[in-house]
Image 1 (cartoon, helix red, strand yellow):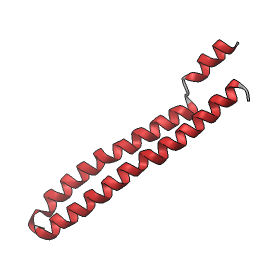
Image 2 (image 1 turned 45 degrees about the vertical axis):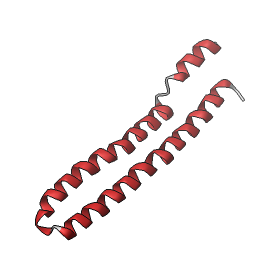
Image 3 (image 1 turned 135 degrees about the vertical axis):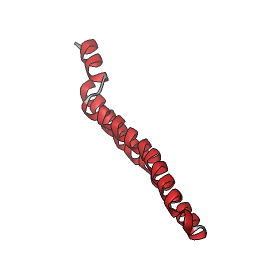
Image 4 (image 1 turned 30 degrees about the horizontal axis):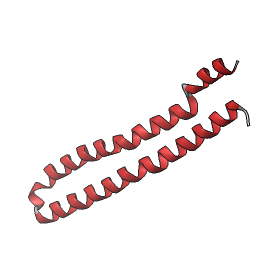
Length: 91
């Protein structure tokens, strides 16, 4: 296996693991946040607007973690900084 092929294989594997693990946490967090918001709205229906607004802000922050993982995996696949380094060292 050549050095380029090894870097490609490791990059693809790491990108897949990044997406797989990086999407589990936000999914669980979003599910719990929605469940808690629904419970709060059920207990205090008059505050539904405030709870909903706060929920959407919180969901956006939780989702940003998954987006960061997606960006890292895209960098590993398409703009890998190690390609140029190993090509320069390898000749």
